[in-house]
Length: 309
Image (cartoon, rainbow, N blue to C red; front, side, top):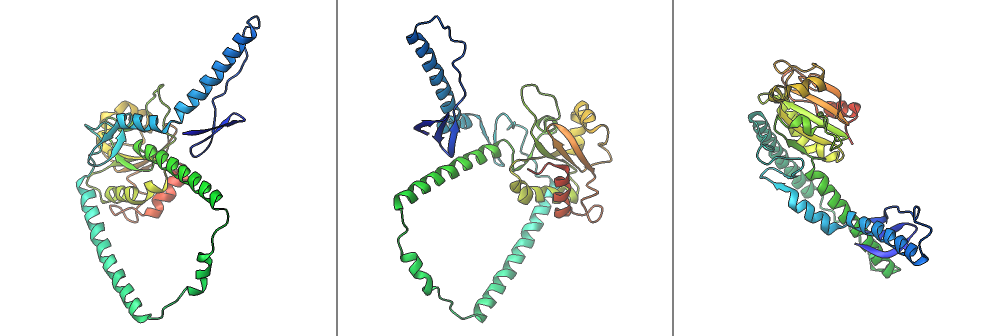
């Protein structure tokens, strides 16, 4: 996990230097014998080191993730964030139809691209050779031992980044998930919870299941935008059901700016547990009322709301 090198309060750990938990030698009874004082100092050093190693122990982290992992046909998530009996069931009719249409359009475009490539290859018969640069590949690189060490270090850094990314995904960051209407406002951090800090940035889509605008927005968030912003949680739930099932939280969070019977679908930007912007009926994001959203307009609106991380 970490090498034995210990200098300046840090260890050479996985993914780079790891700072050891701070400790101090104050408060030791000066009347104790020197050997007893040294034992207390040694115990404090040992406790700081072991607590640091436990915090950065990849094996222990993987075991905790395995115990708390919820696996469903539609997603993998941590048990602290998702309820497998209610969350993850969000393929409403309009979204299914919109996805089928997008798949059909993509297949048609792919056939046209392949045909154009075949025509270009037939027209261009020249063979560009790179033989003049082959000598660069034949030369041995200097310092093979140092290069191997750099490769190992970089591989460890990438593995650690992949682990952090996987854990973040399982907690809803950088992915678009469906949550139950009775839980989605609490998961977005809009309900006071002294045991847990609210997420720093949340994009909440309150869905109208019959709306093309809702379907196109969910498709864009799922397929493109969420993956580009790993520091943001993207979630959706039935808009009318959410406002009715969690009415006290909704009224306090939205300050009566959203009405269940007239403002769905809506997009809500939330920062640190506080609503920063609301787009009722997605009216600023569509070219025409009732039509699909404009992806660029969605990204600009969320960027101006400060929730794209």
